[in-house]
Every structure is written in C-alpha cells, then in structure tokens.
Image (cartoon, rainbow, N blue to C red; front, side):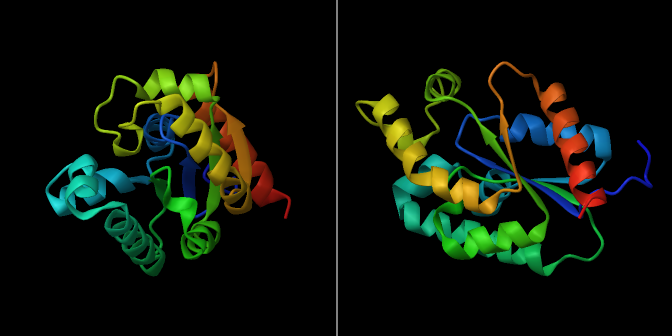
Length: 183
C-alpha cells in the first residue's frame, strides 16, 4: 500500500445485520493495519454479556444508549489513530448517531438483499430482533425503515451479494482513495 495515497482517518461500515460488516472490517484491518473496532463486540465485552441478553434484560433502548455512548467516545478520541469501525445494524436509527458517523470518516453502507440477509442470519440465535415468527417480514420492515438513514449517513453504498470480503475491501479502498483525492 502506498501511504502517500489519500485515505480517510476512519473507515466506517454501516448496514443491516448479515450484510458483511464484521467480515469486511477484518479484511480492511488486514490490508491497512488500522485499529479495528467492532462496536457490538466492544459493547458485549464491556457489559460482560451478549447483545441478546442485553436486549432481554435491559431492552433495545438501553442497547442503543450504549451504542451512542461508544460513538461519542470514538468521536472524542480522534488522536491520530486511524480506525475501521464496524457498527451494529441499527446504529443509524438515531439522528445524533448519523451525524457522528458521517463526520468521523468515510462511511460505507454495505447492502445485501433480504434473502441473503435471512440466509446469513437465520442460523444465529443471537439476533434478538429476528426472534419472531416471521423473521423475513421483520427483515423487510427493518430494512425499509432504515434505508433512508443508511443513505443519509453513507458516502458510498456497496452491494455485497456475490462478493467476498477481499473483493469488497479492494473496492472500498479504491473508492475511498478516489473520494479523498478528488474533493
């Protein structure tokens, strides 16, 4: 990698659960060496319990408060450290979060079709929002609700269907370099 090529301070991955944020985050970390912050993992570690238990014991609003607090913390410690930040799928639900994300770096919206999201998430019992009789309908409703927020927050939308993490990482880096060298 040519370090003279312009890159943003942070690369931030948003998108619905199962869209590939964690996988692409690890690929970008391997290629750039930026610190990787998987927000869900950080919250689970700090709380000492999985997200599903946080939802069960304290509710979604409490979890969303934890996300906002972590975003504010990451935004406040912009001390020259470059990060890849992989967010939770619902982080864009709050206007404050959308503003913070958009201002923290280059925001990439990873998008996958409903069928792909369902296939990737259906075997995981740790997805509290999908513990319902009709998870496909829930995915469709949440994706429709969140789509304008993903669009508002992101600098780039990438469709992940049919691409592996390496291909996605290369495309994101090319786009970020172009974006920051042609203001």
